[in-house]
Length: 272
Image 1: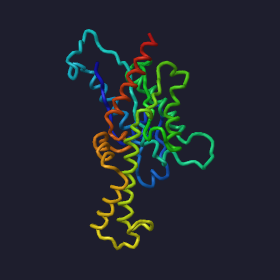
Image 2: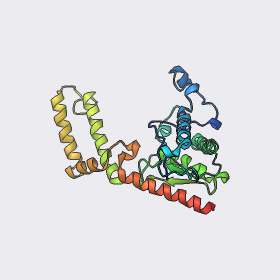
Image 3: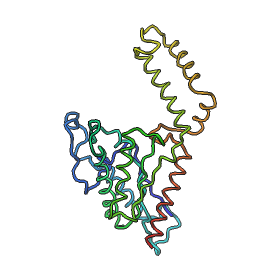
Image 4: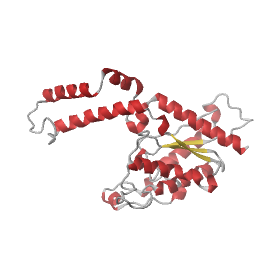
């Protein structure tokens, strides 16, 4: 078995991984004003991904010594885990008035469906099992936008054309709730540091008279009251990255990977 990984952080589906059948990227007035998201670079990472996979498959034996050219290979599935950069992109998915009908991220569903069709066409695998790893950052208590985005991300799996060959796997159950709660406290400490530096009106340094040393001492005491030594040790032991990367929690990624593999195997077995 050979796993081909193509992963660049901080990328969106609406622009960076935009696939051919999604059509040209519709630049917004803000894009034009700030001279960003040019048409020629739209889909750049889709093309890089496709080229990388094709390069590997042109000579699998280079990276997989057990490969037998006589037996050839089969593309057994595709796993997609992404989402955060689309969820926070208010430029492409503008905020809607409170109570407005529909999902502001509905376009993501269309782009995801186009992506699935395109990668199958790209690699000559029309029924290739496809697993959508539905973003689970934030775990059991997502904000409204987070929840709406999750629904938009999962939606393509319900399309008739994808019945039995596309599965949406919810990753929120694998988010480490304890680490998330401690990380939220760390964010409060960072916010307090920002308020002190910038003389926030509600901070202890509103009058700007605190020295840097006094600010450090204040923060040290603030953090000690907020986070216990046991919690600090747990966060250090269990996380290695920010929340948008699932806190870099190895346990979370292991559980997600297992769920993706099981979903892929289930689709393959049911297709036989």
